[in-house]
Amino acid sequence: MTHLVTGAAGFIGYHTACALLERGDTVVGLDNLNPYYDPTLKEARLARLRAYDNFRFVHMDLADREGMAELFRSEGFQRVIHLAAQAGVRHSLTDPYSYVDSNVMGTLNVLEGCRYNGVEHLTFASTSSVYGSHTDMPFSVHRHTDHPLAIYAATKKATEHMAHSYAHLYRLPCTGLRFFTVYGPWGRPDMALFLFTRSMLAGEPIDIYNHGNHRRDFTYVDDIVDGVIRASDRIAAPEPSWDPTQPDTATSDAPWRLYNIGAAEPVPLMRFVEVLEKELGIEAEKRFHPLQPGDVPETHADVSDLTRDTGYQPQVSVEEGVKRFVEWYRWYHQV
Image (cartoon, rainbow, N blue to C red):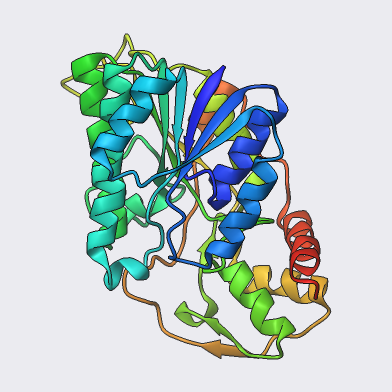
């Protein structure tokens, strides 16, 4: 099977591409290698992917309308796993235009490519950030998400609506996955675990927001990838029982599905720090700060739909996941 994986040099894209390549599929990986964080890490991920004979890299920006159209025409993808995006809640407060260019216009180009070139199934990344100001836990895909707290969340919510419209108009099967806090080896340097580890090994204090009162549904990257591929392998279909007088937000009379994907077990941030301190053998110096604009105090995924439909079951505990990350970090940075 031939897949397009967008964001293949990114954290989740890299791991997803590896898993597909390992099972023998052909992967065309697309990435623009932008400098949101150090491209050296992206190049290192890419070098490992290039070791596979069944991988080919395309250096392109999702917003390149003509380039994306030609790519879809020339390759004949069977499946598309769209993971590329401008990520990060805090960065969206200072550079909102990059989020619209990448997340909205880029996704439109992916949808158009799928529409005109017979793609069997589009699986795309959304985010737990779309739940915004919700406080009813666990977060359910069957509840409306109309109160995003940052432009990042708003653009990702827009992609969900865009995908549904293409599923409705053109019968393009689409599955959206709302990711909850993902961590693990080869992770993004702007994420908490990476920042904490770097600072602690350098003997520097770590910054902890919301005075340490966050709870996050930390999810190890291998569990995320397992769910992504399970969802991609299950082509979205219309829901026969869908009722337009009481519309379910996670299903449709179009071939469209929406799932949460997370560990389904929120962990207090300070517990997460304790696990990291144990693995590093270092007690962190902590600087506490208020809740940041656009941030939410707690996330907790209800993954029951994904489990029911695909058999998804998270396997990796926080203790084991942090251990694996620290081992990778020490190896990669020779610390």
